[in-house]
Length: 383
Ligand code: DOR
Ligand code: ZN
Ligand code: ZN
Ligand code: ZN
Image (tube, helix red, strand yellow):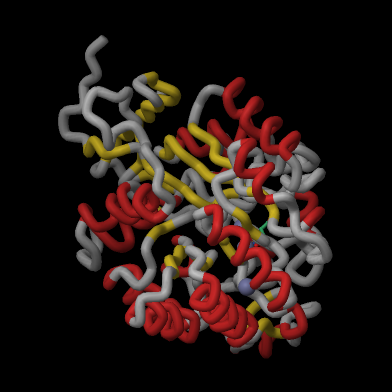
């Protein structure tokens, strides 16, 4: 079979190390199959999924279930993270050895944050001995109760409680110190503030094993852009100030932030219709990530194409020690073919994801994936 790639960009399959697939337990939001299809349509061939499902990925049975469903879908490689604490309750550590044996690729508290330093230090000590990464959603709960958006002009204008920047940076700082003490590889989830960037940059300078990720929405939107009380602009961490956005961009360019992830977080229209105060946090990400980054950074002259591709392929592979196939000569390839010319509007109705919750509706973008090849097989192609 011959594939006509003339005029297109052929890239290694994109890798997204932070996604929510919702199965088991929240299949009305997404399933492993619909999430995998959405990922493939977005040009991704490998995704790593978070454990905040029901039940939580805190046992080998749930790891196996995720792997089995992903294999049955047969679209992209799905790598499960396991939870640091049982049921993500922050009370009792999970059995890291058993979870690693089952195929978990790291331990995380995404969605909640491990709230006591002692619990996090114990987790990091165990993970360090097993050479497994700890991936932390950094947020001090005591600072964020009841706040749907960041502290700033939008919150003030609408009389909403604001999430302060230090709720994130306090935990980043804490976990950097714990990583230094334990020697673990600590990966910082979805960096969104200038202060977190500063702490990560300093930690890297003195040789602490820390890596970090950022989402397209934190590089493209600030709290000042939120048009009104539409919960499609509600995510965690929240959209911050323009100054924070600029700090995140600079950090992605200079390597302080290693990788781009989507934090793909599908929710149903009914859930999002509850409004800014009550709707769940999160936006979908797979099907807009590359076109957003390509159009707004590469085509706009702010970032080299090779650097964008690296931050979405080789860098995640390096940070997490993945062998994605293309790295070894002769192995079946993971590839993405991308049309850099055709402009299309973001239309949530066209998403393969069950989630329609995006703030990017109507954006005119280029850089749409047209074919995705996982392990040498075409798993998705434009018509
Ligand atoms: O916006 C978010 N949504 N942030 C998180 O940390 C969790 C996620 C979710 O599970 O919906
Ligand atoms: Zn998170
Ligand atoms: Zn933390
Ligand atoms: Zn997340």
